[in-house]
Length: 491
Image 1 (tube, rainbow, N blue to C red):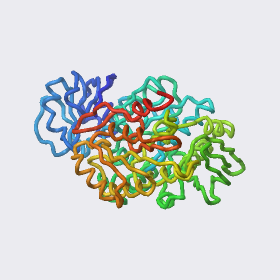
Image 2: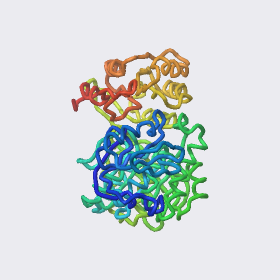
Image 3: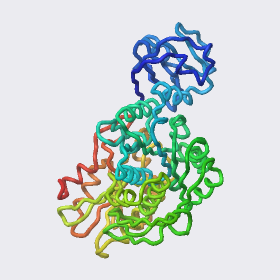
Image 4: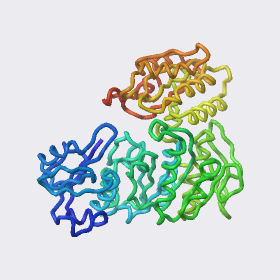
């Protein structure tokens, strides 16, 4: 997705850190865009080679629409009627140009970058709650969109593109926000989308095999994550969870001071004790001479990890004990993360965004352990995304089968891949015949909800609070939550 925004600037000002200023025309630039169709007169068009399209092929359209100048790579040789600035990597320079265009808003705010395979959104929500409890004006950017209300709710990317990101950050800065908590995805790090964010603190939660369709290997995936801890030397500190083997590896390469966290060992900041129940997580976190009393309504051992990382970050930022405790305890749930709905049948529906084998194991084992009625049935509704890592599909089915009385395999953003092929790869992971396959997610979800009786649990995985299905390049309106609400006391 592409965006265009208008401000006042000059071409040589925008490119002053990229090209010698005497080599760039001093012409006004009223906007920047990577989409030739959205160019208005006086704007700068940046041609980027993407996965599906090469922006260099649309330069003539950008000029026709009134582009004042064009940025291309060094291989582009066609002569143009407007200034053409050549750079080695246009994709990389978009971030720098956007930061300059919007006057480097993150230099005026405190920014936290959080990365990890699982738990980014929950940790970001917890930390934002801590900051708000401390009286800070804080905003959260990630898969839930931009929180607070009034800002873009585009949820298709964990980390927005550079132009959108800096435009929104500029708006937040102008509106008086002093703190930003941002999820940093491996794609954003690899694609230079956050190169020019001035992070004050960075956080590593965990890393497990994911996005291998894009990165190729777990090593490449790890190297993308490492950039958050090696490419921002002006950061104050990094909070690293060393319970994860990749966290230990990051500590040896991090270019800023490191604060280690662990759920199990006596390190910089760790849990002294904790207890998990259906009522939440209760325990004590020790950070130097300070003990934090945790009384959270969130459940699951993975949320123990998220609470620890958020507490450690708040402590490292100098937030007071009471504000940290209040922030943790007031953050009662994160949309799409272990959200619970009481069904009129007497059962419970739980919605979680889990879409990796590790997340499946953590979510399902947690729910199984916390069930009050050992004879109650567990129904699991899930699918696998198209054009994504195919190797995990059978693994996720195998994990679901360990916990499910019955599984309902449904579409989950098949994108441009054939749904029948996705389902075949999922089904190959089942060893028993306790599953049904649906070509329509709504029908599969309703089938599971119709079967649930008192104390039964319907676990709906993958989409969280997404409001669409991505099929054949189109976003089609769809919501698990809306359907569940028809069966619940909330509906």
